[in-house]
Image 1: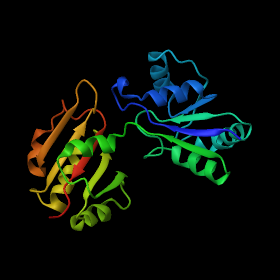
Image 2: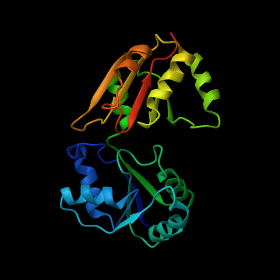
Image 3: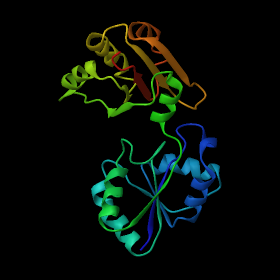
Length: 223
């Protein structure tokens, strides 16, 4: 029986990968990745050559059986996401759950996470927080936003550049314009930016020039 390694990779700066992650990828028989075009850049940077197989939201159902069979045949597989830790708001969760169900050894190789990176630099409470992934786009969105009004823990979620301003406007209505919030974008990259302030202030700081890239939004809990 092989081993499934859950390997965290950089969220931007390629130097953030751990020595253990590099060694694990080098020793794996196969690398299952969200997007082979992204993963190959990392492997080329470190001179690593390994067979890659794409495993993403649209292919996961057809690839699970193959990957599980490879593990049962004794092959070791390193599963990676485009950036950060696999299984956090990506299809890796399904593969990991199936491997556990089949009695396959699962080994985490910890490293970068956009959620923890943003939270650590937010200046808001970190002793208790709630992570929401991506907010619903339509169904259940209004209900979820309204439920956050009474949440006392720090709230963390991902948002796309196309919806971030709209989301902040909605939060301003639900939480009040004076709630503290932190917006982190392009973390660890050249144009990394962390904007802190009250919701009404942060909205005014967002322009077409700095609403690019993926966002992590950190919201103060109810005081």
